Length: 354
Image (cartoon, rainbow, N blue to C red; front, side, top):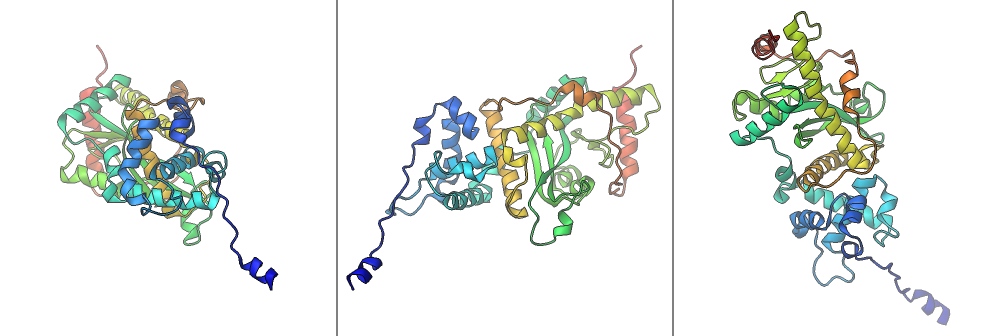
């Protein structure tokens, strides 16, 4: 009888000690581990504090700052097991729940986190600044952003599995991203399965609609590679340049477009979760991409260094030959107008020197 009663006595829970991360590391160490300094971590926390702060009075409730730190550690490393143990002092299951809660809060509109840090310029002074920065690269005028797609590898999804297999035969999310000349992200779309072509993503995105309906001012251009249709606001290279003007246009175009490839490289260097296979659902992967994009811009705003890893060499990008486009892009109505616009643009801005 005594043994039965003793067996029903609840064992006392043993808690791991939680470390005071913000006061344990200096700013340089915080940036190395979490990609943000102390002020940056607190800034992110303030965006979602109300959504992720536990009810008052709960025993050993996890504070909002620790939830954000755990999420940053996961995004920086891509390894859930590094979010517990010596770092945070909690189980991997608890860390996973916190990361999910924090990501949900960061992408929910009331937090306004994504829209605060990822936004396309609309005001004339912002546009002039972006154009001037791009022109410094190769004297290519009137460009505010460089566009490209990148694939984020994911674990085999439970639903619509075939739609996520990309042309390189692995499962992925295809992400459309626009960078400015300072490697800040101006726009990102992270909802399409890997089988979807870049040109379809473009033709169904809100940014293209903004160019068409005039909410983005005239004389603003994006620059993209040959997978995109040539349009009055999207300048693509000549596949077979036949004149000095077209060759000069292509040379400047290629040097300028390298920005987006380097920008994608920086994003993935900063947040290693985007480097390997993301082992969550496609919907959750989309959240991760959006949050990483906003955090990347926050790091740029705060002038925080990238991890000490080899960068993509600019000359290698410029010297690399164009990859053949084996998949024909979706060609919208009026594409001929885009080609004629490109011809006029090249003639106006790339006359050979006398």
